[in-house]
Image (cartoon, rainbow, N blue to C red; front, top):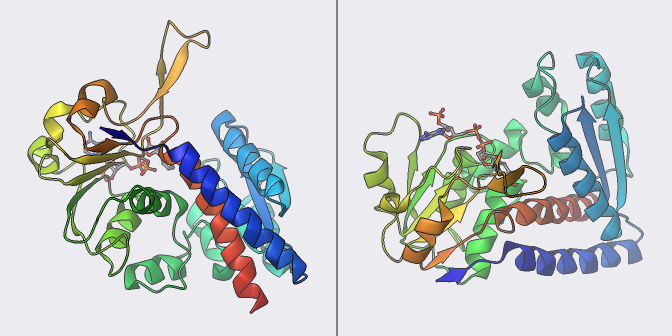
Length: 292
Ligand code: NDP
């Protein structure tokens, strides 16, 4: 069984990004990333901190804006418009989820698609669906695809089951895998909460990608002997043995599933680090495209 070390792969990709940043800088362009977080959700703040820190560490211009929970739609839109117009900013990210009174879709649609490094703007969603190489691809599915490529796992002709159909992970993941080319050309099934005989459907997969947000839901009977399993889930559960009183687990019951697998990602240390590495990669792409 191969343990796919997302942390090590993400570090390698970040080093490539660091080189690309240095190259851009020598041409007078410093890639700039603006991250905006509204409200006081601790997980959102942790994600944003880590994105800002990584961008700065790789030599980028990195701006973090923290806005109070009472921020209005207009105030947040004004921030987005300001960054859209700022030539020093190539990538803009508004951390999800915003407080309930904010219309997240309107915020995403206000982004300049050329700065939408999260890949959530409808223009980029359409480009991903069309297999357009100019798309900004959402970072988590892009990271999963890259993990497969870097681990030498062939997707062409493979039966892949994507478990989950969100706009952030499941749907774009399915498009990437079915599109033509490297890391694609797969036969893709998308399963979700209305899927019948879910375990049997998943057990058909050569490659199973779990993104449902249900702790350790995928059990051994969901997985074919010799399958590859990519676990996107990040779930905090109670753990009395840990000093914190909690721990992170994936959507896959790792202990019982791993022995059946040809390869599997751990949680943490699998998909998570790749998401940030792909955000940095997308920001460099945005800066390169702006400089063209
Ligand atoms: P969403 O809640 O938006 O979507 C979950 C999807 O899973 C839905 O399509 C839902 O089906 C499906 N689902 C939920 N429960 C079941 C079930 N019991 N059986 C079958 N299908 C089910 O989640 P996200 O896609 O945003 O995130 C999924 C997971 O990935 C979460 O744990 C999240 O924390 C993690 N994540 C990790 C990231 C990383 O960087 N590693 C980044 C983003 C997310 P339906 O549509 O029918 O309701």
